[in-house]
Length: 363
Ligand code: SF4
Image 1 (cartoon, rainbow, N blue to C red):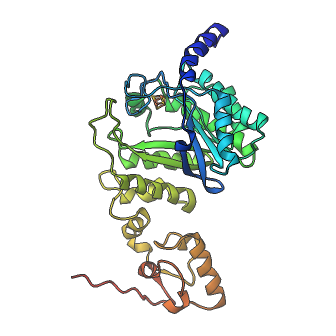
Image 2 (image 1 turned 180 degrees about the horizontal axis):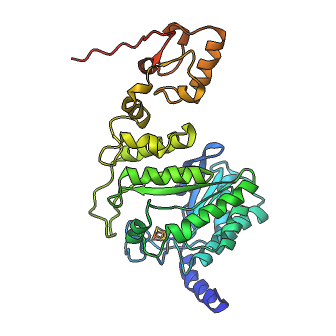
Image 3 (image 1 turned 90 degrees about the vertical axis):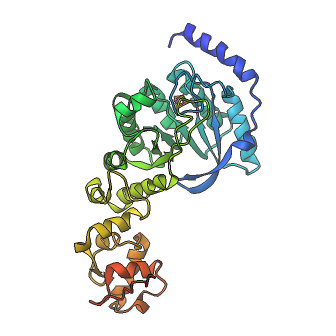
């Protein structure tokens, strides 16, 4: 970007900054961070955007959107006022793309730099990387923030082209995720996440799970967020029905199974019906039901990897079971007293060769 262009953008932006009377307190929400759930100030550097993504409330052509912009020093000052009185513990800074991605990122990076250098804030900052930003801007963002996000939005290049013209998974987002991946592996305490929308097109879960499997295997992503589509008035999709939030929940469960329990797309493929996850059963249970030849497992001899695939047994429960059986052979439900989800677990295990599962009577 040359100096002339930058000056033009600055003066266009200044009109919106003057009118920005931001009520920062209304932008506090509880967010999951590497340090647990904490109150976060979620701000947009500017609500102006030169892109026109069909699902977005901030798209260029949407008349209803209130357009404003914050000066970097105002972001830092507004945050610190809330931080000093204990109302927030971290900042999540996003933005519309105003002018060009690097101009926008420069403003966001300046906000965080002021926070770090002038106000000496050492706490949690999450910066969203703008689509199309340069590698230099990405590197600066990673240096200053604890977490960065590059949102894929959807699972396939051609699908993205239909809903967010000018964005590219293959030529922009994936190479950036890879770049950030390399950077954060060199710096302890840094993380990256991504986000996909669900139900904005006619994509199937099959397609999303393949992408989630690929991303989790290839990169160190702390998590992938899913957001069920919700129509926004004044956008081309305003009459499209909202997506069922249970679908979003099932995809979170799948991401967790892949990331934490070493499930793969191939493991989960048999549970898909017409390409989608069942909504009435959680994916781990559906997987167990689709693999009756693997159950029941003998609880006294099954290894850790096998135990954590049993519906109802999580990592802590598996460790607890292994501890108990080292002391005494487990031969009755009494030996598992205090274990969560016991009645569910009993369906899939043998205790010393014997099943204690009692099918509930149904009338
Ligand atoms: S680039 Fe981001 S803010 Fe702009 S329209 Fe697309 S999703 Fe919305």
